[in-house]
Image (cartoon, rainbow over all chains, first blue to last red; front, top):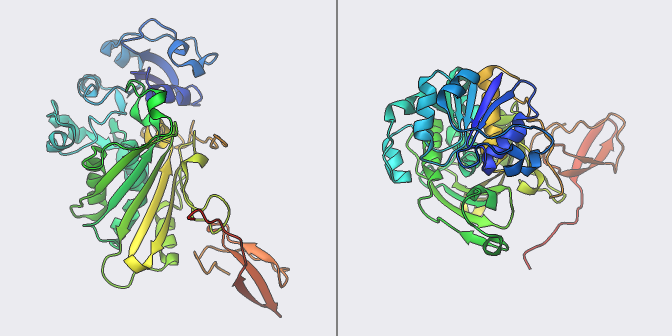
Length: 350
Length: 54
């Protein structure tokens, strides 16, 4: 199958290329970058040297739609609205890695992103790209909107809890830590300002909150509000979400029941691992042990004095948080083995 | 026999002997086996933990 990548000069686009170059079913037919048109890919993505002699090309909708069965769009938020529409109108399958088609309610774009969506009618065409929650819809979709990296990491930890109705849905607090690559390649965050950092950067109203509320509300069947506070930390890749919840009324489930709940949700999932080990150095999810892979690791602990259930989740923000999810969604959309091109063991130590 | 902590199957072999340590494949809890005839009992095995809160 021929695929294209629009906006392949950033970290996410580079990660999509890394995965596609080793994918058994996908052949990269076009890679675009306005800034780098004409340059060899490896001049911008040096890790790809020796794997391809392709060059970046200009964005040309007709050429993309004629030459590709599916296109990944990995451009900044707000930029994808027009690109996705143009490709959708030409009949191509699209996996969009921006936020521009993630939210179902057009009003949410004003609330979380500060702009009105120019094509609100197209939002209904997009499926939120978490196969663990929406596999059948993704399989039928022509447009998939990949989730935000911190959003998907939290959602996977919390969805089984709200679906089962065991936590108070008025008090959910997501505390996220994310590595510097989550800020993108053009954000101007120099090493001197990043090294050693533990920086709260949006303690209230972070834009991923909108996605988390959307997906958890759908899982719970009621409107859910979430409090989220992300922090930048001194790693290149990786997300750790400490999701604080409080048991709803009545006798809380015991730990074995919580294990059963998570096993029921994810026992058959290839990219979710349950981590709660009594011994060793890896007792709870830790992004250090999944870097480079498409896993989302989930664990939990219980604070009985406060009726608190802490759901802990980790992912690689460029993989399950972006490119890995995108390729997983492509596999589902196209009927490929869902793990095709993704079954990497994590790189350790990093 | 299932893990008392997380309910995963422990897969204790038939020829396990008293004093043998089994680890749960899911949650990593360690148990010391105690056998009387064909009856198998488990008790929490002693472990040394980390303490990063000093």
